[in-house]
Image: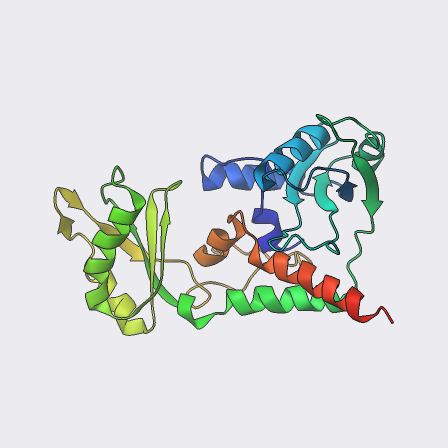
Length: 269
């Protein structure tokens, strides 16, 4: 499991990064189980399906992810098995005991899937994560605090984009409503420098606190995997990796699933 995976959570809405890290620490070292579930009503909203599966399997261990296949075209050939990732002692055995359980009008068909990802898919996943990690549009940026957090997100975006656009070309803008911080990224280091120089500027009645955003250029090497015993004091997961890991729509996971599906289809003669 890498930094990106450990930050994903469909089960808990974290109150802070500290709470998120505590959850990651809680599951660290526990056996991992990959469970597939069929039989659910695919016409239900995705969030409803996820809630039903979380409620079903929460007694088996810590549910860290639920993946429901997306089917915008209502394809009859879509693999409609949902995947549930559990951490906990005896999680597989407990999950199998739920096979055939009535879940509000449908019976859960539960199977344990191999948790050993083949080398080709694993390499593809790693390449996608590496591509996102090192994307140049996230090299230079600032974190902004102190703005009026009572404003709607779109108004915060309009206000701060107007301020920072004069610093340089903005490549990415993210309002973190949970931690009340805005991350602004620039195409050039000069843009970052100009933005940092605005620290303390007043916007209305509010004084902005502007600092550098954790990125691959201003960080120590990643401590993953933890295999050499070195102390990585000072390492911070790049902010954009936390942002994308916490999105409901996991683009990387969706691409890996599509990759596997395409490969299975091409192998059928």
